[in-house]
Length: 60
Image (cartoon, rainbow, N blue to C red; front, side):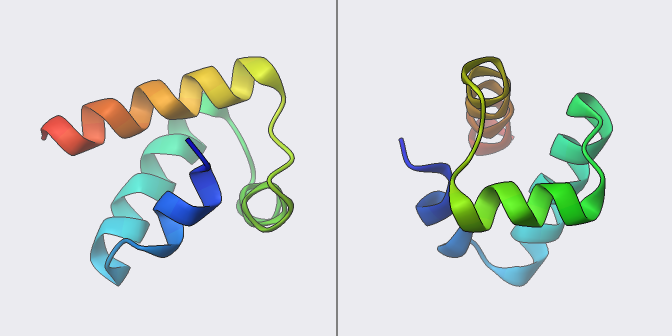
């Protein structure tokens, strides 16, 4: 899954919710989150954690 593509296709409200979940659970700062989304530069553990968050987000 390409996280940045998934994120771009969300509504503004869903982006905000997902962004808040990722920042609070992984500990990214907001600028770091945007940098990693823009450059798709997640480390393997970060990618797995975000994919897990996305899967929970989809189910909610």
